Image (cartoon, rainbow, N blue to C red; front, side, top):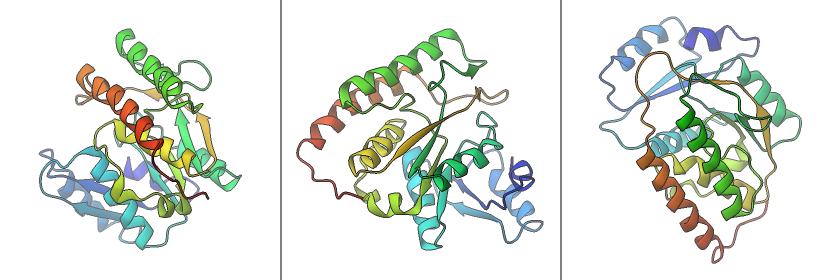
Length: 224
């Protein structure tokens, strides 16, 4: 994945967040840093602190270093790294948040069992109904943010650290008045390893949407 990203026409930088992964991720990254010392970075944390906290750690890291466009993505090739260019172009073209969407042009998912496709698709439809915000892929984790979005959102007040984190970040960005654009992608499930996604995680996200909507009634959002 690192070599593929660095082969793209745009000179992206890569930050890897590693929470003590048992597969030797940190050691591999450290070896590759010798080859890409100015473009590859590693942040190591102790223990499993949650997906959302890893993203927030990365966002704060990028904000301190004055990056204008900040991305999040999976590193198992379920997200095509070539789509990084398309997400960046969407933000350069006027979007504040560009989302790599599996559902904006139908259902573009490869290698998922039908049950999981339906669970994911209808979870996003449910989120649209509850929040009233027209986003087709609420749980997508492939995104590009303009730095002003992450500067405006109070990251320390984001409540969810699991997959509901993806929902909360999109909803909060829109409530702040930022323009969110969905860019169609093809999502290909990993061919190695196991996913942490489960019906329990989706149930937590479903209940989280209700909490998110209720809290929004009593919160004032600074407008962009």
